[in-house]
Length: 378
Image 1 (cartoon, one colour):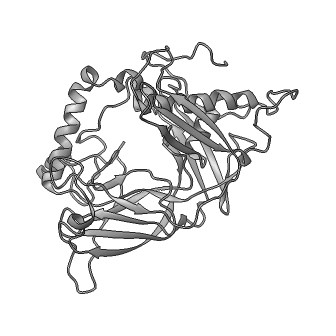
Image 2: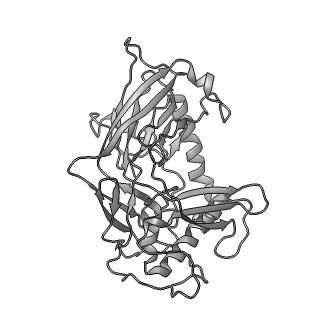
Image 3: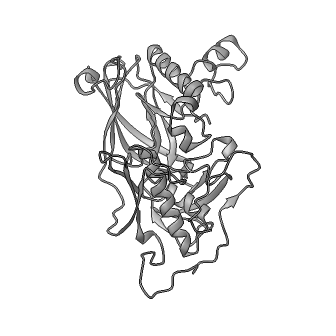
């Protein structure tokens, strides 16, 4: 699960590095697929290997290959679909200080050790990893030689780059495309900006986990140091001055769609159990609602799981105050399909598309329980 990124230092023209407490403005000037590598893939992990947002419904590892035609993407595994991508890096972040790293490791270890007992959300997301703690497994430390005391020490302390945190990092925000600007807190001298995880396109939430269109790409950044910017512009959202969060500006280059089909979900799970204002449960229901609906048009549910993870869908928390239900919505641009997917009267709805080829899929041989909606289509 380690995501390897390039780590760079940015300096002012006077040769003075960014200092802790500064704000680093990182502008995305240009990006795209590597010339000659105009393709990518979307995948979900096996449930025993990390799964995804809907891993209890889709326990098998799956994969679809996408090919790029300029700004558009299409997949032989998901026929009848073509859409413009909003290319972006999944990772943009700065390095943590030792103090912040200790905060991360302590709180994430607490979740890993006690989460199943104390967090209600674990009942909904089942056996997904609760946290990814420092580990020597799959650890990449550049020029530091593996097996040395230095390597062992760093590997057992360094934060995994799976989640986004106070430093930015792997936030997978699809809107951070050309012309966007991210304002990142600086925690150490030099900032040590890292970036990577290039995506051709992604839906809000990246629900399949490896769920954007992952690709090889290039990225050009422009950085500016705002001296003392952390204190001036970022308000701590926790008990220390380090508990801040980045802010960003969206660039002017985005696909524009005029017609959407929007699916709603509430915080009631598959068993009919009521949850209190749980936006994760509501979002899960909205996405499953969309997948089941689109499977009526000749697609497999695995095809739609991967598609909705990588196409330009819009997810929203539409209501979070009316107890007991949070309301989540999941909007799909209808023009990405080559058929009309809207509900209609007196028009047969059915599998116009042949269900082959399907997405590439492995079998699931694990023993973890699988969730099924008893009222859903097969």
